[in-house]
Image (cartoon, rainbow, N blue to C red; front, side, top):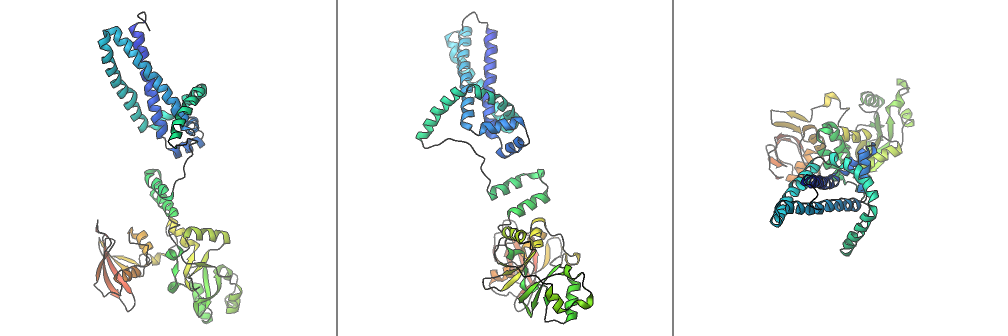
Length: 425
């Protein structure tokens, strides 16, 4: 480049090279900053830039090789051009000054600014850049291939193997974080449902079942009037039928089967002819597994048994669905019976209440990895049946024993959680 080239032309060429350097630097950051899951979603929706970016990122070594090839080419060219301009303007002393000025200009306008912009808005930069890089990679492929062979050879010496970059599956905890970070994009209701689905493997049938002592069923040893009363007043569509006690269950009665029977035809013999085989599941079964089993067996109710075959409770399909979406069939007359507000920050609570239900209805954080009821939790912590007015602290919640009997805590008073207080007695 000689004296016959005007300074304006050299300056314009330098400006163009700096723009190209900014493009290469910014697009590299943008492509590497893309959210791979959002990218795949947009590609599946047919976005052309997303499709090309996804294809380029399958082999990141190639696109990085292309970008660095272009970036180094324009930066070295810029350095040579500045040297010529500086020499023409001020001679040899100006060359050193030109190198310093070029470093500052490249650092600010061709590196920091475009990379910051790309990091903040990766899709705006990456998708248009992908439309340029995709055909450019085809044209320069032999040169990029040779560059990558050399680079991969160096990596091979350090035990690094290159290959296709596949989208890694999210773990359950990572997916929980994604759902939490969705913010206003997903309503609070649906976010809660999604998190509940992710937690189904952590929750077992023991956590949601109706316990043994609360099971409502038909005892064939009762007289006909008592059986008729149970059938007519039942809040459930399916009832276990047993002799003497629930451990002697003989079948499950679907009340729909009684619809076509006249009142006088409702006898014990007729009743037994309408029963279906009881379905037993072991305690500790995760809700995710039980939901699949209900679906496969076309069942809606199961009896939970322990290792000795003794019935511990009943779990229904409705119980599992309510664990996901919240209660939707609760009898209005029963709502609020377990918790009675005594003021702004204190509640009188039935100690037989299920801890998970209390947490869900009151937005509390009582521990759920041990006993299922508040009574069981208190007795486990104190290792005795406490006297009334006994106080303890559970996970930051002050609890006062209000009423007890010989074998259990009947009611307690729960106060507002104390921030920063660890579990203690």
